[in-house]
Length: 223
Image (tube, rainbow, N blue to C red; front, side, top):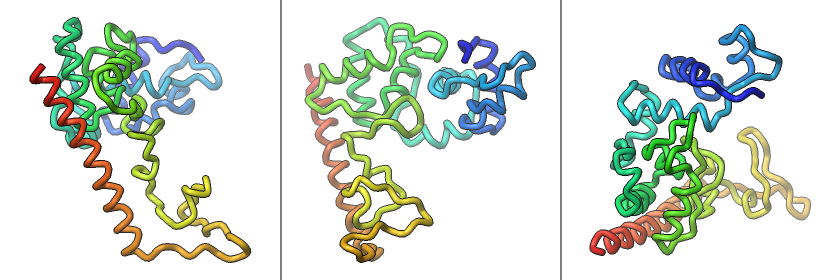
């Protein structure tokens, strides 16, 4: 697979803004149709394409309904590049952004990582900076809207299908698939009320973690 050029990323960005999903844009079929000199199997890297596209949105160079919806839930997704060369300010901004639930990749993009070049703050440096500033295990989402590593290693917070005997057995069930048998008997699903109670308990635990991080951030601000 060839290295992506700025022209390729710009073409992908334009398609995404017009409504094509990043998943389709980063497939070989889209690349073959978009570029006459494409070779078999050529495609764009998902992470690089996402960073370029998201950087354009955050820097105010383009609009995107998908980004406005998926990133709009954060308290602050403003451009942080103007402070990228001030380590003290960036350290505070990184802890604040993580407390708001932002991913390492998103923070890196806010600090100027546009997918073409990492600049001062690649995702790895954002992550190591947070690890050094806050007493918290540095699990976090990879550079995409969701996927990859999970916050606090809590994969259960990202499961659409919640049923007894799935995650604990290391088995993830497809939506139309029956639960595995245990000792020759079909595992009974939890009632809807039980599933909702479990989900509510996990949400409360997750919120408690975020509240602790916010308290640590407040201490950092006070010096």
